[in-house]
Length: 472
Image (cartoon, rainbow, N blue to C red; front, side, top):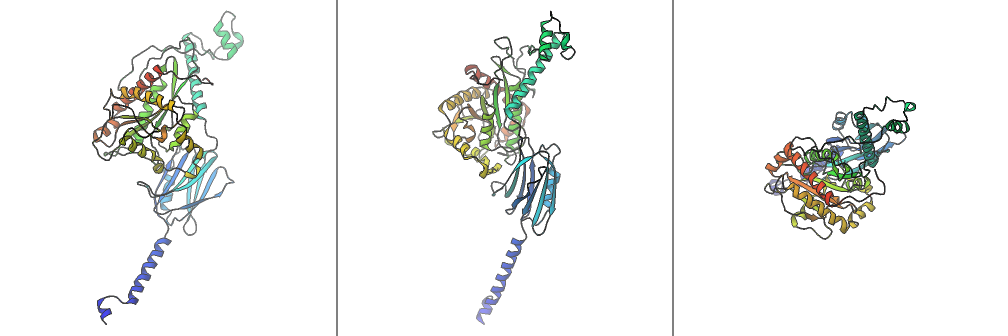
């Protein structure tokens, strides 16, 4: 009697426990809910991400049709969120032509992806990190990926051909209007066209002008003629690496500005300036590790620079701290003997964690690449990187505040190309409201791109690029 008065009896407790267990079983049985779906198209690869509140499993059902990828996804009870993928697809996606989603029996959803070209899919899961819950990722890599070095060479050849056409027009000659058999013996230029099928590659004269300021367009940098009087075949390649991208927004300012967006804008402005510039008669060409909003793993950024035989590697970021007070730009080089300051070490750790947020397929990551990044950085590379950083820091200090008056050093993974002078530029503190506003402005982006270009030109003026075994 006392037990009944003071509390529930054993049978009541057992019934309540059964109810809890029953509810738990139903909760597990319902499957995962789709939180968000995203598509990140790029020439390099297209990423499809399905974010959910529980882990999903996927398997490819058939590999016989090269024009379609069909995946069974287990664990989804509601297909409505998945159908949003159809609306996310853009017509200009270089890899995906169409998407179709259908619910199968139970908690099974079938995803059909129609392809524009043969692809090599990588499918993997990512555990919750930062603002993300569970992610199921489909990375669709083209089987026949374009060679970035060949593309740079092709661009250079096109420039030379266009210069030839302009030069021919200046001489009153239309290259397409002359019959090869009609070349006159007293017309040397006509004989060259008859033999080669086009005018000789003569650059159009470009009058020297001062760099334009604050227009948002590439400045008219003085184009120095080659010392030999002809076309030089030494192309200087500068790899520009806009930080973060795709699944990884980078730091976010108090006004909502995303690091990945502003650093891409700065990189594109700097690209235009580099492409319009000659150094000691040598033309320069910028190569971007990403030219749109997609994620590139840290080791792949290094690989890309090495693949195009870059002379320099410049990674562009926008700093952030836990408080809004810090401000000013910084430039970092690699260190293999510890960071130059606690702040530099903290910054390197933060940037090196980008792969976790952006989402890397750990199983596909080459152990050899890992070893290269960790062990093969050279003293000479670090020495040249410090020279480059100093040249750039002096110019950046003319257009804004500096956080530190010297180049700092730390173990940034993205700076570990053993054969390329490499620096990381923190353009400003995006966590500072005033600097966030500056980063959003065309004027500061333009001033910064001009300053970085002057630093690059200054570096090459004192450190001419080495000869290549293959010239172009």
